[in-house]
Length: 471
Image 1: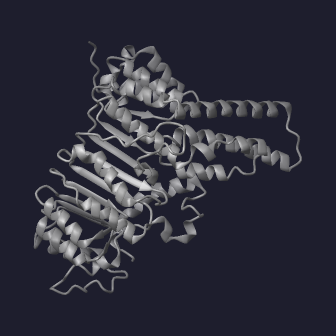
Image 2: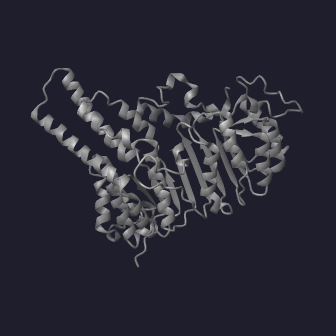
Image 3: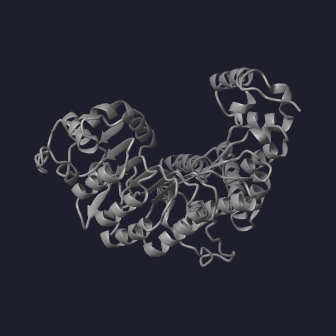
């Protein structure tokens, strides 16, 4: 059997259909990108290239996955599957149509008559778009996506990590709303009203989980980010003619991350029961847990959710991350006590305490846990007054413009006496709703490129932001 190293040329060992799939993706790139790709083929090993496979909700993507899984050598190199149903597959297609419609709109508003070649181009684009729409509907309703994934996953013996991230679902819906200036016949056929509903977006994520379970693969890392709250509703069959898809329970997980967005309309107590059902087989194996809710919620609702969460126990939990959640001090203290033997890393992002105070929470963390690192991201003023200095808990009562380095020293002394805390990060981060000037109704910027540029520049500013916290 041919073995692949991590470096060196491997073109002779890759099946022709795989090479065709790769170069299909490069056909529309510029010359510099093609030159870089050719260098990658000459210097990268197959192990590096095929370690992570991206899946999109399209026939072409499923064909690539099937070709790799059918190859006896390449299938052993795949360790991670990343699934993003909107960003590359749907948003790019919709953005192309948006450009075409704007071209039509500009020409018609000026009273110009399109040339025969322009009309032919528009007609061809619209025919391609209708074919794309029909293909997406088939994938959604005829179980082709699930059946293909089950078959392919079963042929990937070393697959252990699954990442599900419909990152730009909300932006895709916004994109649809911007296209209302297009002709009525185009607008009436536009498919976002049907497919971009949360229930349909969530359905594909659930299908992927069931494919993992049905293929009996040993998934150890599962990350589900920016999913709608509908993900936690057990019966998804009420809005369609297809059978319900229930949440799959996956065993042997070591790392689990769940980030939920969207409007909260579900019973949170029932939702936490479904999270417990999904994680129950992994109670003994789970080492890292992250729960984040990127949506403001009613305190009473979130407390119900958190109460049920605190009743869960993990035998080997080492890392806990909570974001955008309201916690009850007594319940969190009880959670820390039950996990004091293993819990070593804690990250709290935009977390607030009700029915208690931060002083009791920190005191419990200090007495019950042997922390190796703690990160505080965007916490409120009440955290600052909770750290006592010389027995006085109001040292940081006047905290506007205070020196974060002093806060760091007091925090380290509070937790570990005179010993330094190995890893302590104090970060101030505004949420989208904190700055009304950057909102446009749904919390997203109209200028995608400007937003991407601002995000890329945020890393360079993070050090200065960490020096002062403004709450």
